[in-house]
Amino acid sequence: MALSPHLQSIFDALTAAHPKGLTLDELAEELIRKPVTYPDIEELIGALEAAGVDLEGPSTPAQPAELARVLDSARAFAAEHRRRPTVAELAERAGLSPIVVRRALHLGKSAAQEKPGNAE
Image 1 (spheres, rainbow, N blue to C red):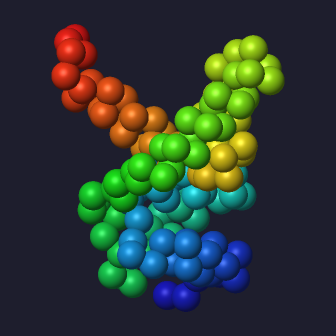
Image 2: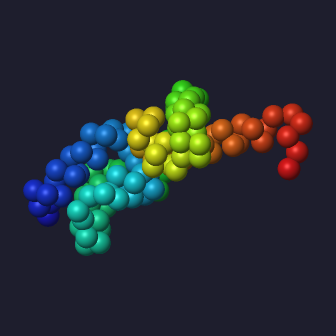
């Protein structure tokens, strides 16, 4: 079954933005501000799976360069606004998606916990 033009454009954008595939979390992040209904989402998931996209695969690991961008953005934001930024504010300032910001922050937290002398 062919997708409606509205869903086809979203499908095309998703497959172009994620040529190696995407997880359900990444799909949710991509669709959060799109005008889609639950049946639309189910139809998109079906089309993605039919195209061979494994939505249950491992998520893309965070890159140290992304963490550096997020940390630089967080420092600059905090200096300007005298408060900690939200994930959305960090994403906008760093030019990254919120899911990439969350992965980068998780990478930073994991790295900090692995340093010698950081007992929990």
